[in-house]
Length: 147
Image 1 (spheres, rainbow, N blue to C red):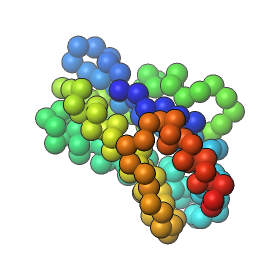
Image 2 (cartoon, rainbow, N blue to C red):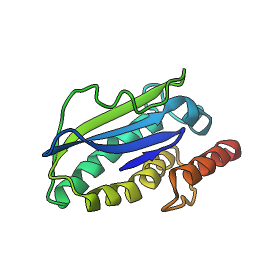
Image 3 (cartoon, rainbow, N blue to C red):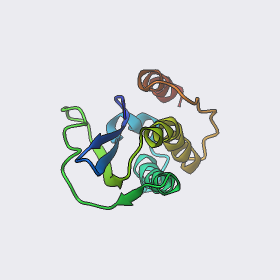
Image 4 (cartoon, one colour):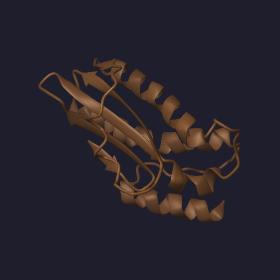
């Protein structure tokens, strides 16, 4: 499962036959026009949104008879584009991964991340659902101009 654009990524890749790695990240540089000063120091809504979202993703993993495992690793480093943008990333292992689980995560994660961010900034915005990564990227660029 891969959902990658200039603002965020959600990727699940096999590590071996029993385990997959879940990688997620937010581009703080790209999100800064949206978050611009709408938070306290150390409370970036993109970072907090991804942290909270990943707890939700872990719950989805468990609900689907799989098991999340916290690890520290470098397996996700090559996913984010090589540029000067600042990224915040998180990852964990998934035991008993299924394609159906990946589809649920891909459908849920992008819109829910933005929902959490905007809620933290007290912005009421209708967030589109089920967009491709490129369509969501286009939406985020337009949102950055609007805000």
